[in-house]
Image 1 (cartoon, rainbow, N blue to C red):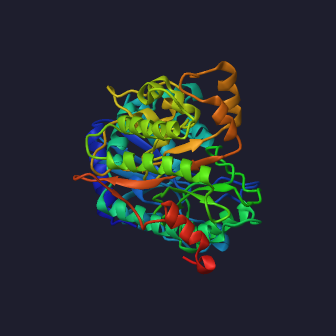
Image 2: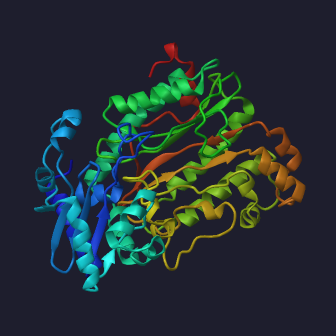
Length: 467
């Protein structure tokens, strides 16, 4: 854990930014899988972790901005609970480690909030993403669900986003700790991949590495021969010669910082000619995008650069035609690249997405483009030193999308539909790395995971396929 003064300083900055009222942060509760004593693996709310550190269920915290007070509400384990769970440090001991002196029983929170409401004081909430939190706030604030939005505070959202967007050196080191685990996961995946192997065998082995290193997966692994499906969590296919498999996976560090890496692997050990061509196009787009990462650069422009690079490459192999810039302006490239180039990374793999993507990735002057493909870009604003972002271009051949566009003759002046038909069963290729924006430019985080065609094929076809 970070020292207690780190969390105290974060809360001090938050108080200064919010200026008045009460800030209420809810920790997460256990989520039963099928009955209360059989829960899913617990994951604390990221905002609660960031400001209060405590990584256990059943907690809430109140920051009284006006009176400069901080209180953690919760209960110590009963003897009955200790019998099943074992002894745990007291709430007071754990609060002290986060720099908080005052604690109170969980049952006291409702009365404190009732008094604040009666006094007409403002209560600041972050958006609620769990249904049980909606029920909890209904009870605590004695208000109907429809009125809860009145307590969701844009001031608080913007204050949290401002702080969490810029990573400290200690946070970057934690992300790199997660990336060290992810490096092992991806190297093992390359060594395991081959004809006759189930996707689930590799996906399960990767999760085993994350758990054995004291972490966990930052998100359900995408390991699929159907890489054209962007978030494909099905692992039931048998890999066969000629397939390419997209491995989009990342570990979460013991302090819950995420990593997010994608590599695309030829199952037979070597890329076919068509696979090499598309892979090279994606690799060139990623390289062009990463070279453009400097403080002050608007990420939406870097996304456009990646799109134009993809379009140039697709034109070279006959899949697109016409003027490349005009094609991108018309959105023709989104037949092949339907998503955004990247997103913020931190305590969440899509960092702070629960607070609202437009708060995290956009500003009052840099707005989200509502057009297909562009609307999926989670980050558009100017980059600042300390941002950690992903860079993940791809090319995806989605049969259903091809059929719809072809029937409509959409962007036919820029797309060679006869050539596209040849790639109908191709799948998809994505490459992704995690990048820190620095004062001087950028730094790709983590140990290098093989990415060039030669590097990947050397691993897959090397002696014993050992990393």
